[in-house]
Length: 113
Length: 113
Image 1 (spheres, each protein chain N blue to C red):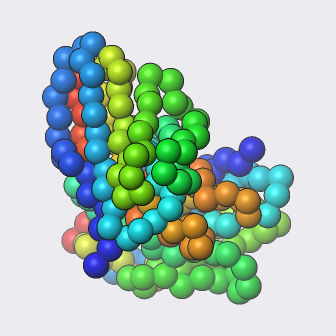
Image 2 (cartoon, each protein chain N blue to C red):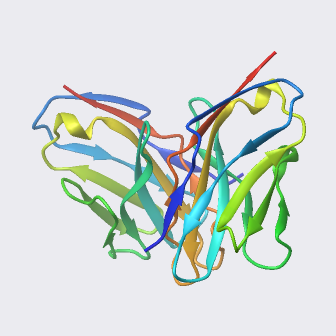
């Protein structure tokens, strides 16, 4: 069975500072990895995904994530955040045989001016 | 523009009532999902469906059932609502040929008194 751990429930940061949201997963098989974002009062939307190939994945809104197989991590980064990045971020995993996504518990990113 | 529409954004029901949450997608997607979202628990899969009249249990199906009579519509049913079913419910869909990019509705916030 797969699982996802998001180590930080909340991350406060000032505008224009860099940010890293951490995600670790466990799985006995090869996986696909995803980051979703949920803005206030909205559903989730895909930020980026890793399926195969380059371990550095670039997504929308200047975010990127790096797949590290040895550390079973898929941390999300942005070099300079904006107020509009304030949202909840979810890491998710699925295996090669299913469309079922297993989500982490989420990290609330709050950007202060 | 792709769209997943959940019929009710906010509902208030009494314990023991039967509750229907409706979800419609206009993208001709084969696969549809119902998740519930709770603070600190992330998203948990209740039920999913890979085709019309097909359904499979997710991780927390107890107290819920689903119906998929048409490809575009996936309904979540609470036969007898209880207070511990107070939550945000999110519907999502994906085409069977796409990996991981779930499209989400805006959510239905259910309060059971």
